[in-house]
Structures are given as structure tokens and as C-alpha cells.
Length: 266
Image (cartoon, rainbow, N blue to C red):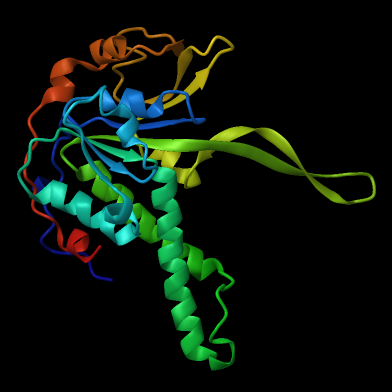
């Protein structure tokens, strides 16, 4: 393939320090405080797939929420995010609660697509409800989920995605060669690569007294762990977190953005 003759030295520009929006993933068991923490961020709008936002109406008067039929398909969730990106509004923080269920809807979208394609090829099994995914199927799903994450990353809002926690297992063989699955800790319940998408990844857990503790797994902003010498694990306190992150950083006005051609096709 020939090299593009339009490339010149001016193509290689000096990297700039860009002030990004906060993109945070919070994971943990039910009752650890994921949603209450997310609602403390400025001017939130919540995509409430868990139908739990009504429990926090008193904590967050005037809370804007989309729930029920408004978020019962992956496409509806995507369309809401695209609207927030390309239209003027007063929100500053998008909460996805939980991203676990968005990922489930995404898997279901592709399962239905593959099932439809399979039925067209094999009319004898037209009433089957499942299709065995192969590597190509998973690649298509993975690429599409990456496009969803890119939409979130480029959105000019704080994004707080909550994820459920699930058990992690590993396979071991006994002396006879029989495979057994044993518990190997816990993990966030969403796509395994989502851990690398967000700039800040934290896990919430309760101690025996019911107090929530926050463990920082990733902080690319360098605001929590390095600039303010925050401990890796600390008692959950939004005011302290807001101080570390910077109120001005969280409160910046939101810009209306033009959707890319790829985003329009999502």
C-alpha cells in the first residue's frame, strides 16, 4: 500500500495536556453505597436500569431519571447518550446504574441478530431460541461494545458507571483429571476489559459495622492517589473525594458536541 503523500512533518503535533472529564467505574455488592455515591456528583441524570432511583429522591431533589421502558433495550440506552452528547441541557454527570445490565442488553441485541441470521440459513430450526456463538460472533460483539465505550469516553460530561460484583472462579483438575471450578475471589460483573476503559476504577465494600470503604484500583487522573497522597483504601467520604478530584474539575460546563458519522450509526 502506498504511503499517503499528504503526510508531512506538521502532521506530527506536540501532545497537549487535555483536561478530560471524569470517567469512573464503581463496583461492589448491593448495599455498599454505589448509587448514593454517584448521586453526589454535580447535576446528575441517571439511566436507572435497576429501578432504584426512587429510593434516593429525598437525597437528590429534582433528580432526573430514565427507567423502565425508557431503558429496556440497548438501543434506547445508546440513543439517550447520543442525545446528551449532541443537545443542550443542564446535566453535568451521567450515571449508568448498572452498566452490568447495559452489557446484558448488548449481548441480547447481538444474540437476536445472530439468531435471525441463523434462522434465515436453517429454516428447519426456525423456532430455536439460542445460537452457539463462535469467535467471529464474539469479535462483532466486542467491537460494538468498544464503540459504546468510546461514546462514553468522548462525552463531555462526568460519567459514573456502577457495576455489580460477582464471584470469580478458576478451574482445577484433581488427581483423576476431573475438572472442578472453585471460588477465586470476586470481580466486577461487566465486560472484563471495562476495567481498562475508565480513568478511575474503585470498589466499594462494607465492613462488619456496615461502614463503606473505597479501594482505588486505577487512577489515571493522578488526582486521588498521587497529587493528594490519598491512601489506596479509605473510608467512603464524597467531600474528601471531591477535594481530591477538584470541584472545578467536576463542575465545568458541558459543551454540545457534534456526533461523528460512526456515532450516528450506533
